[in-house]
Length: 88
Image (cartoon, rainbow, N blue to C red):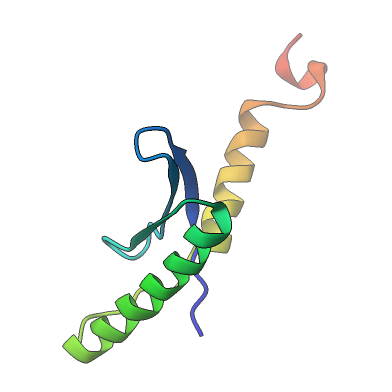
């Protein structure tokens, strides 16, 4: 079973939550609640993977942990927790 990173945000315009799987082009879902959106994006992910397999498309390996690690390292480098590290 693949496990991909999921981005979630609230859309004022749509009055609900949108979830996107960045590693799977076009894979997204909508729900009025976070829970509903998560359920929908899980179904969308499963369908995306099934379709890709049937069509013989390459299925990307999940890079969620690596993306998170890179984000956290960048955030730490940008916002040190100790003032002396920031040159203050």
